[in-house]
Amino acid sequence: MVRKLTMTSAFLRRTLHSPILNLDAIRRQFPLLNQQIEGHPLVYLDSAATAQKPQAVLDRMEKFYTEENANVHRGMHVLAERATVAYEGAREVVRTFINAAHPEEIIFTKSCTESINLVAKSWGRNNLHKDDVVLLSILEHHSNIVPWLQLKEEIGIKVKWVDIDDRGQFRLDHFIDIMDDGGVCLVAITAQSNVLGTRPPLKDIITKAHEHGAVVLVDAAQSISHGATDVRALDCDFLAFSGHKLYGPDGVGVLYGKRELLQAMPPFLGGGMMIKEVRSDAFTSADLPQKFEAGTPPISEAVGLGAAIEWLGQFSWKDIEAHEQALIAAAIIELRKVNGLQILGHPVGAQNFAPVHSGCIGFTIDGIHPHDLTDILGKKGICLRAGHHCTQPLHRALGITASTRLSVGIYNTLEEIRSVPAAITAAQSTLRSAFPLR
Ligand SMILES: Cc1ncc(COP(=O)(O)O)c(C=O)c1O
Image 1 (cartoon, rainbow, N blue to C red):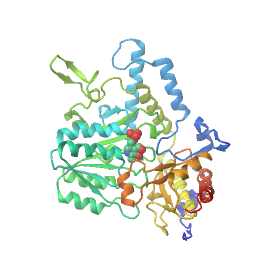
Image 2: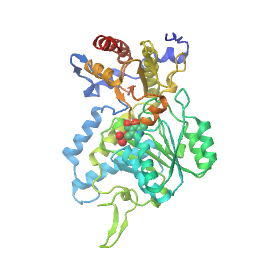
Image 3: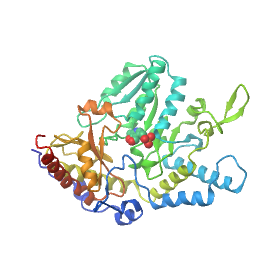
Image 4: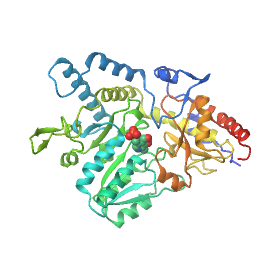
């Protein structure tokens, strides 16, 4: 039986009852949220997959296409000038947002995945040799695994893994042991698990890695929309994220890299705009950031991302974090009442709530496949994600093949969270009557 929780902490008393943000006003800015699915109000709890977009982003992209659209860094005409100003303006917004020292340290890519691939294929191929170690955590998304396994096949590097404990927390002791064994040239680490919501202690990891001369790449795909990111305070060497999880459009990602590292790296893709000069037998690369922005970049998408960051800037991270922690704490309390449901990284009886899980929680339910569950919930308008969430090594380590994920964004309400357990219980009885032997 699930142990009853005693909600004694001031944190829970405060956060579970008082609205921190003006949610009515926020939700009015997300037109998509205001719809019914088969007669049920839409309950969007899948922001870890992609966040919905506020009207400010939609308007900014429409303005770009109706008033400013042209290619960037090419033409001399008025539209080319407007488009270039808008695109470079977005770079400056991103620079400020993550506190990078120089605009040329911000590279626009198509996604977080492409940003990580850029590091693997450019920095990795140039700096890693056979038997060098790339250290990952078992929490990683496939985007931060496969590029390194490709280098393992290509160059013969070694890929090593840091374990998690039974709370889904990165094991710093294990990390230190592997670092002390030697040979680690790169630590590629998520800032926040996209399944458990747990956050490795980045500052400790980066300090230790640097003591050993290793470079650190941070995958900030999930953390970027849930708390402040300060690349200079972190002192990370690279940091990657996507626009679409940050209330911006898809098709644009960001790679931050320290200037001296990026300057020493060869281009990733070849084509227009990434060159200084091309002759029939050779080329020279453009300066940063163009060296890594071959071809026509995601212009309107970068402008939309800039608008998303500016829109988010009207709220304080303190309020966003408090609001989302309240949602996650409520989700844990409510979901634990469902028969046979286990929250991943949250053993029965554990009383330490939201600060352990940011942005999302993953769970399993005895006898119900996540795909069946989310299919039924989807028809009631409740959008959760099911599957391995591109984290097969993590799922294997947890002894499962799939899980269900509930993830939150700035626009979610406690009422939405509280609607989920009853819907799951109803789905359980639907499935039990359809498949009585389960
Ligand atoms: C932790 C993490 N890293 C990387 C990615 C890849 O992001 P994208 O698909 O936008 O490239 C995701 C996407 O879900 C993620 O959750």
